[in-house]
Length: 351
Image (cartoon, rainbow, N blue to C red; front, top):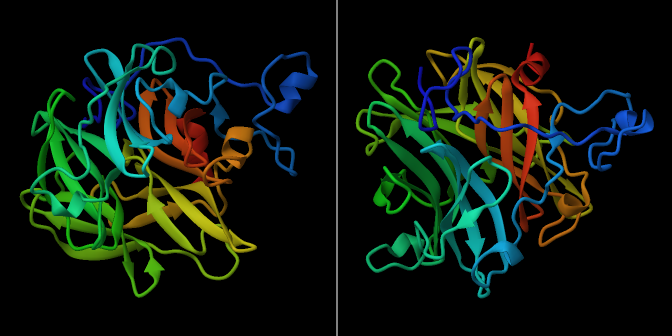
C-alpha cells in the first residue's frame, strides 16, 4: 500500500505516515463538566455533538518565538515521517514578509521540535524567477515507486502564485523539478501512486474568479494534462462558497481516497477558513463519491481566532497513527498546530 511516510501505514489505511507515541487529547466541555481538567478549546456544537477533531493540548506546537532565528510567523506545515521522526515542512515568513520552507523534526510529533536554520526551499534563489517572492504552503508525499518524497508548494513571484514540484530523499537538500503549470494556481497535492500508468495531482487554479479543486494526470511527473474540475466552491452563503482548496495529500482508505480540504466564506468583508472532507474514487480519483455538507473543523481556539489573519484553520499535513488521523494545520496564519480524529469518524461524515 502507498504511504507518505518512511514506512507502511496500517493495512486498513495508507497514504500517510505512522507514529509510535502516546497520544493526548483535549477534553471537550462535556468531559470537563464531568471532572476533567482539559483546555476549553473544543466547544460542543449547538446540536450537542462532540467535535470530530480534538486539538492537542500542546497547541500551538510552534510559533515564531520557537524558531532559532527571527521570523514574523510560522504556519501551514506539510507533514510526513522519516527515520522514525515526524518531519514538518514549515512555511516561515521572515521579518520582511518573504516566505521559505524550513524542516522541523520531532520524535513524537508533538514536542521538542528541532528546526533547521537554513531553508530546504528558499525564496529568491538564482535561476528560480518564479520563486522571487516566496516558497509557501508545502505538502509532501512519499512515492514508493520513486523511493523519495515529492514536495508540492506555492512558488510566488511578481507573476503570481504557481504550484512548484520538488523532490528530496533526506530532507537535507531538495531538487526542484518543474512548475505544474502557469500562475494563479495553489494547493497542489500529489497522490502517492499511479492510476492506469499515470500520476495524479490535485490543485486549485483561479479561472475567471472561480477557485475550485481540479485534477491533472502525468506520465512522468513533469508534463501534466487531462484536467477535471472535481470539487467546486458551492453557491450562495455556504461555508465553502468563496473558494476551496486541497489540504494534506489524500489518504487511501477502504472506502476510497480521503481528502481534507479548506473552504472559505466571507463574513462582513472578512474571510473565514474552515476544513471539510471529501471521498474520491480509489481507482479514478477525479470522481468524487461524497462531500461533507458542513465543515468538520473550524477556528474556535484563541490561537485560531486571533493572529495575523484571524479565524483561519488551514490543514496542510497529515500522518496516520493506527486508526487515527493526526492533522497538522496553520492557525491564523501565525502558528503551527495539531488536531486528531479517528479516521472512522471522519469517514462516517461522508457515509
